[in-house]
Amino acid sequence: MSSAADSFPAGFIWGAATAAPQIEGAAFLDGKGESIWDRFARIPGKVVKGDNLDVACDHYHLFKEDFALMRQLGIKNYRLSLAWPRIFPQGDGAVNPAGLAFYHRLFDAMNEAGITPWVTFFHWDLPQALEDRGGWVSRGTVEAFAKYAETVVREFHGKVKHWITLNEIRCFTILGYGHGNKAPGRKISPAELNQTYHNALLCHGHAVRAVRQHGGAGAYVGLTDNSDICMPATETARDIAAARTWYAQRNEHLLGAIYGGGYSAAYLQRCGADAPKVLAGDFELISQPTDFLGLNLYTGTFVRADAAGQPQEMPLPAHYPKADSGWLHLAPQVMYWGTRLAQEAYGVKSMYITENGCGYNEEPVVNGEVLDLHRKEYLRSHLRELHRAIGDGVPVHGYFVWSFMDNYEWEDGYERRFGIVHVDFATQKRSPKFSAHYYAAVLAANRVL
Image (cartoon, rainbow, N blue to C red; front, side, top):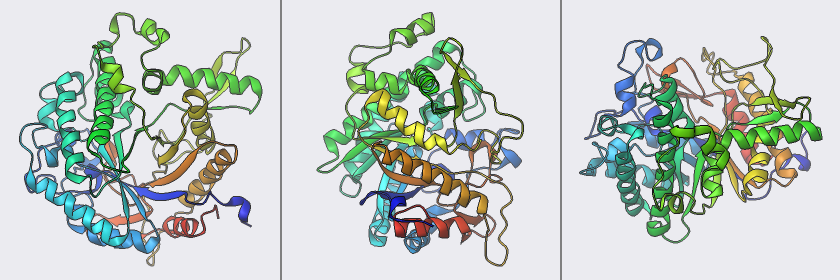
C-alpha cells in the first residue's frame, strides 16, 4: 500500500517527452529541408522494413488532438524538440517562415491546453545539407547551429522558458559516425570522432549563450545527457568506490569537460595524437553555468571492485531480463546511481530525468486496451529508485516519461514501441495504454502507486 512516504516533493515536475523527427511527419511539407534521418531511412537495409519518417505520427497535423489527450491524462509538462531543417532547410542561410509559423501554432495550442513546453534545440535531425559539408566533424556545423539557436530563442522566447541544448551527444556522434548504425551511417577515424564530441560541446555552449542573451526573464537552460551509468554490484564501500572511478572515466570527455572547464590530463593522454582541436575561447563557451542537467536514464552496467580495488564490469547472464530493445537491460537502480553519481562527481544542483522508458514490440489493442503490465512495472520500479535518490538528498526536480506515444524508433522503425499511448500507424488512432492510466494516477497523487 502506498503512503505519504512514497510521495515526491511538492512542486515536482511530471511530464512526457517526444522528438520532432520521430512524431511530426510532414517530412517534406511547407519548405522543410531533408534531414540526415530522411536520407538514412532510404538506404536499403538501414532501418527495419525500410520504414521512414515521412508521416510518422502525423503530429504536424494532429498536435491539437495530442495535446487534448495529454491534458486528459494530466500531463502538464511536455518535452519536445524543434526540427532544425524545418526552420533552416539548408542548416544555415535563409530561414523558413512556414517552419517558424508551425511552431508558433504548436506553442499557442500548448498554452491553450495548459501545457508547459520544454524545448530541445537538437534531437538528432541534422540538416542533410550540413552533413554534405562535413556534418559533426566540421566546425561549420557549429557556426550554423549558433545561428539556428539564436534565431529560435529570439523567435520563441515569449512562449518558451525551458530550453534543452542537445539530446544525447553520445548517440549522434559515436553511433552515427563511429559505429554507423544511426544516421548518417559513417565510420570515421578516432581523431575525427573525438572532434565530433568537441563540436557538439561547442553547440551546447552556443545554445546556453543564446538563452542567456535572448531568452528573457525566467529563461532556464541545461543539457540532456545519456551518461554512461554504472551501478555497484553491492552497495558496499569497495564497490561504490569502484563505481565512482568507472563513472568518472567514462564521462570525462563530455560531462567531465563541461563541469571541469576543460579536458582532463588523463583523457588527453588517452587520446594522444587523436585529441580534439581546441581553439582559444572554446571552453569559456562550453563551460558556461547551466540551470540544470537533464539525464536520459534507461539502463546501466554493474561494476564491482576487483582484488586491487579497481572497477570490474560484470557481464550479464543470458537470461537477465531485458526489453525488446536489445540494449535495454532492466536495472531500476540506474535511477538511483545515475543521479547520485552525477551529483557527487560534478556537484550538480538540479537534475531532471528527461527520458526514461522501455521499448517492446507487438502491443496490440484488444477490446480498446493495451495491457502493457511490463511497462507499468518498469515505470513503477524505476520511480521507486528515483524516490530513494531524492530521499537521500539527490536534487532531482522532475521526470519525463519516454515516450508520450509510440513513434519512429530510429533504425528500429515502427516495430519498437516506447509509448504510453498506442499509435495505429495506418489510421493514426491513439489509444492510451494501461501504463498511461497508471502514469496519470501517479501524476495526480504525486507519489509512487
